[in-house]
Image (cartoon, rainbow, N blue to C red; front, side, top):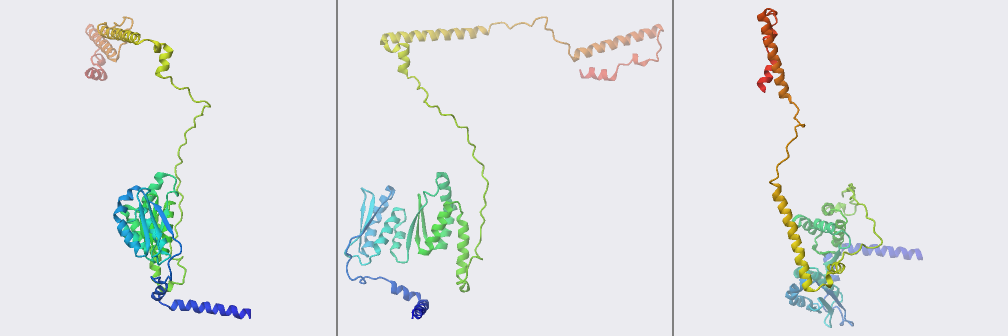
Length: 372
């Protein structure tokens, strides 16, 4: 008997699954809709939610608050703006006909406090729209790195953010250390994954490529019941070696701090000037000025007299050594002497004219003479 009952239960589940698949989506939505009058009586307890908002949102909230009250009155929700404490409060009333709408109102004030414009934030009251506020401030500890990665999520001229919005069909608002997202519940998971991975140093372009491929694959009904892993790209992590920062030598910390510098009063007490009378102090200051002026005058006078001091003459012992030019002149003179001696010997008949070198001066010497 037990086996038969189990089989019957399994058959019923299969039949229910088949029946739900055959029912069109429009009929399912109509069945799930909650309209005014479905709740037999008012709520027994009052529920309320409050949230704080930054000071720069005060002027904007004042402007749109009448529109806010009108939008919430349709659902029987009361709202209050407290400018002293800087808070917004929503609560249920006797006219509230939807018990879940208070949670939607809570999300509405949360989005308004995170700089989402009112026309966009009101859409959260629809049943098909949900929201999520992702905190990114605690993911990255370094402030400069946090700003760079947040800017990477925006992209040049906000192009990266627009691409993510188009692919996920969500509205995304980056403000300070939070990211507010509105859209279908299934798409909000993708938005959270993209934002958290971006803050963990994974570029959003990889997720954008994956979402584009998934969108194309979803159009093919043949691949509805198949795994898409073979079509999706696989990116390898590349560990780029970074230069290690130079760590300077740590200075040894002394047990006791250095002695403080003596103040002006301490110096006056040491010199005894602190106990002098005002007249004595003036006289002392005048004497110091006179001494300083006298010293300055002596220095100036010495500088002026230095211009009239004759330079020292060089001693006769320190004669300059003969240079190359003097040596060349001496060689030339000797060559001329030899020439004249040779001519005199020829005239006297002691020497023949066969030796022509006596009448000719060396070419190398003559060039040197010209260059000189």
